[in-house]
Length: 121
Image (tube, helix red, strand yellow):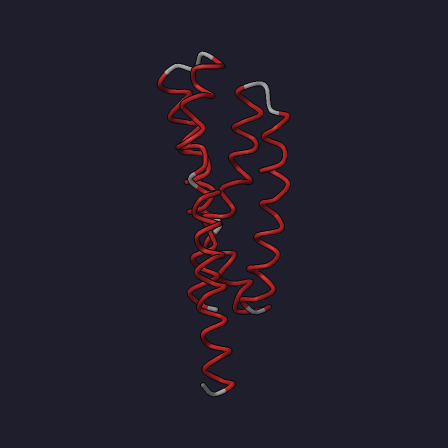
């Protein structure tokens, strides 16, 4: 295996792992939303907003992330994006009200923009 193909394989493996983590984080509220709904007594509209907030943020942030990827490179933007999603994930532990989860969902949704970064990278 040539050094170039080793580097390509390394990028492929790491990108796949990073995509998996980002997708899991992005869709996290679809899984934990059911216990949150029961605990907070959310109605269907509130539950829909909780689930849709990260998806909406992920969709809207793709264009700026793609532009930053073109400007700064995929490795830097991907790393910064994954770092930016750590804090909201950590904040879930302290969320107790509906608006806390909505606010966190806005930032968790950043992980959904990883596809525009990773494809260019």
